Image (cartoon, rainbow, N blue to C red; front, side, top):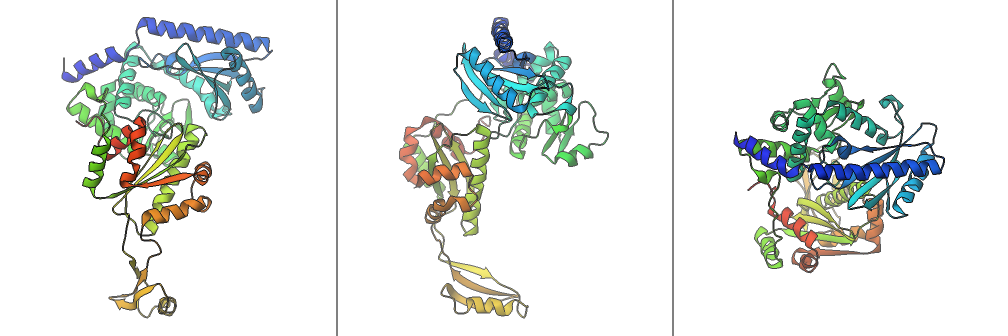
Length: 467
């Protein structure tokens, strides 16, 4: 047996649920489904409850606790009706407990016997042409995977999911931007095994197209249509890219990890060692060693759905980077950590201070814009030197408005509505924010273990599997 096969065999034994575990969760799901049907009947509502997702397909990994119950309504109901009725039925099951979530319809998430149940309403469809909301596809996905999966492929899928979790690329939510469970299943169906998926991924080209059911006769069609780093045509809906959530970053991380694993198979790719966070003293020493400036902006976490939150956080952080760079500051990296109550933007700059003088290049000599340039800068109080000619350009040295990054950020964060900050993030920042420079973060760092782990990973700057 090869080293790769030996590692895979050992990992599979660890990630495959036991028969008792599988039978236990299925019994629980069946009892919940029966109760949904009963409550729907009591309310005079026509609905077909069903188990979907990895539990239904038996591709879940030992330790997973998410159970998806879909309430499938006939097309005769309206959007509003299935949302309201779905919540009403779900709350009957949970005794009023649970947290309301929102996708295209509101749905309920509740803890039942140690599992997290999502009760999601959708419309009954026979094919993608009848689609009324994106979640309507999910029962079709379950049906498709069940029709193509056997016991061997289920094991291969579990290996792929465990590998992706281990190397940090699993999850289609915006916070991660990686591979969904359904995408893992499709890749295993396409290539036939975990190892074959990795070998194929290493050789993928730019905007690779995977079309299992050959919906397109020319790969250029879906490539142009979706314009994404990876295109996996959804077998049940040719107008959808099942890999739409995968960012270039996570695709690159997956391919790099795949190559490294094939060269040197190790269990640590699946179960990376947990790093101890840097101590306060070690973090301070690291910051000093880097010789850069780190700025941290802390504010309250907006109470909005996760994908909405991470969309706003990403957009807001990008806006702050653009403002800094526009004023002449060199941003080396940007990052964000978000917890239940607090969120922290992390910006690393070459330096928080830059010179007061800035060289500004103007038009070529004797150009139509020469006079305007001279008039603007000749007697301006901000002009420190010039205007003069250097080579084939007019130049002037002017005084910067901002020479300290933290001063700039404090000023712009008082008018968040006009700088591209997401509305919910802007609202929280307007209520209160704290800005820390370098070691000023140490007090906050010392109080939050999750932030410690995040910042440690960001500063050490290498994936956990790279040992």
